[in-house]
Length: 304
Image 1: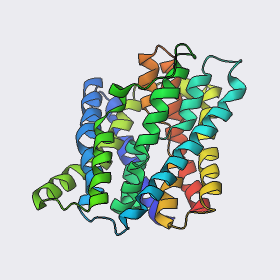
Image 2 (image 1 turned 90 degrees about the vertical axis):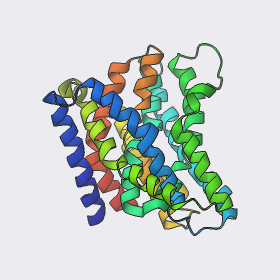
Image 3 (image 1 turned 180 degrees about the horizontal axis):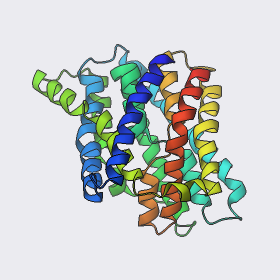
């Protein structure tokens, strides 16, 4: 618990630094976009690959199918919470699809990966990257369909699904499965790039929050619905189900942490693309981010 709070405090400091920098005009919108792109497309790849090439996890390759299944169940449980939790609001507000996605989808790579990396190292990150495929499958099929208010048909959006983190996650799977040894220069490069993921991602989150009006976000009651489902119900459901048959403590802890992180920022991006309420989505992401600083230590202390 003390280690978790210490790690979260360091990450919180970086978020505050980014937020203050944005409010003071040091970090503008161009910086946020560039830094975000660098983090997702370069630094995060280093983190993902480092999880298997620095020290290949001491787990039989035959267990890979079991690990993929568990991580898929983790995402599936969160999706069920989001769908059922948002259902009462379907006829009451047009924000129901956003509530569903904000509750269902965790900010795994930006928030989860740095925390898991600090707590469990490469093994935890490797477990976390396995969630990328089910995450993307849900988001770019049912999720996009719901953002369009059910118009058209559910279809794969392959171009949007194929992202650098997903590609590097699949590469990590192959490296793990076939026990591929990389040259030292590749290992050193991935470690160097991956080391920037935690500070840069937190800095970007803080800077992006600087453009959201805090008091407007706090006055929106539906943001608290999404926050309650995402930060409280999701980790509780994941713990109740997975603790019955998952004996690997690092795997179980990583899945609980993944279920307890704030809402995925990509929901806001897709809300803009599909002409949904991006303002509400931004406000909900901000509220879940702020509240997670309280809920994550408590939830992980109680459940891990």
